Image (cartoon, rainbow, N blue to C red; front, top):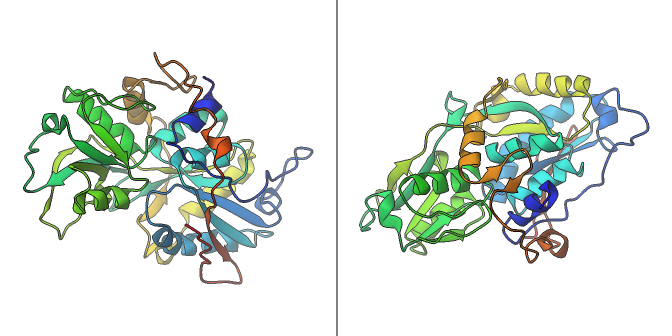
Length: 336
């Protein structure tokens, strides 16, 4: 299985046809961000880690800040995909110029030439945690008790909502499966987002749930955390392959200068520089869970032809948030 097939196969059964076209001509490299943008528009891919409307509201001021910073850039459009793998496919193939990728996806996508720009910071830190939680009255007191239960998780390629909780359960002695296979000792219900994973638990649809610590309720005593992961570096913002170095640097500088006013309603505090080795912990856990980072193939897994065509056979719409220099509010064109 090659890296493209792998990224398509592990994204559950859903992927998207991302809005936009392939972008810049290959004849002459762009010399400015305005030339690099496709017809004055930067398409920005967003994975479905939160409700689409919430994401639109959070990112609108950031998109406006980006658009205002470069001559020739009129609009930054938020494109929310229906799976984590679809987000990386969109930026790898140049359908989106930029994207917010989960930590594990950024590690995988590096082999396809995606360029990390900045890392998200929240609550004064550049890392967060994966939580596994259950009901306060549940008989599940420790990870080993999850055997035979149903667990809500976010996405196979979510770090805190997929990879790290499965790693924790493996360390507890359970068979948690691999990135693209189901576990033997419990069932996984893929929720698609951190909020949806928590909601599945709160609504009694599952016995336990995994999600990022930022989603854990502070006013609901009926939900209790039973485990948390080691620190996970926050997700990076990236640009598509073949983005010239000068344009990468211009984007980095603009993002690092993002004012607090543009992040007041955002889930993060600021954007920070990415230091060498930042994502090594993610790489290590991915390899422990059977992902060969060099080839993006799951180790010891045979290719399943029934899953390789899921991307081409599924055509779903995306949620677009458009913020331009002439508009101060986002446009939500969701049809989900």
